[in-house]
Length: 118
Image (cartoon, rainbow, N blue to C red; front, side):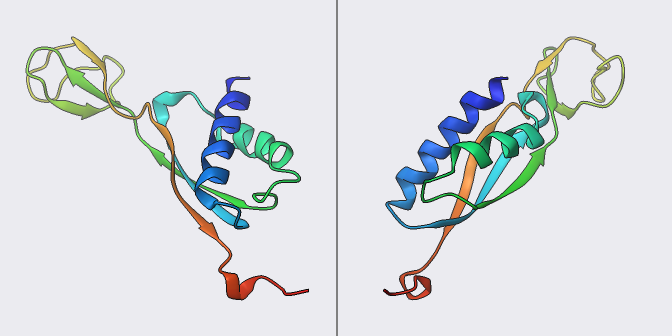
């Protein structure tokens, strides 16, 4: 259910940066280790954006793989082996490093020429 709060924050950022323009698309980066589920964000987005300048905006996700950082040699490597062994030194002492992010990468808005005049 934590997707609700992150989706609220995403909408707030999008509307602030759109500065009153109609938003047509939002490009998000979501890391594998963030624990956010794209489909849940989309579900909450459709409800939260209703009645705002972002209603109907398409969400585009770029998913980043999770990485680990070896505590012995400091090398960063992708999560892949079941024992989390560092490919450089063989140590199993590693901590999550990359892929925990979730952020708005960019937004697309209607240009003034696209807005129908009354």
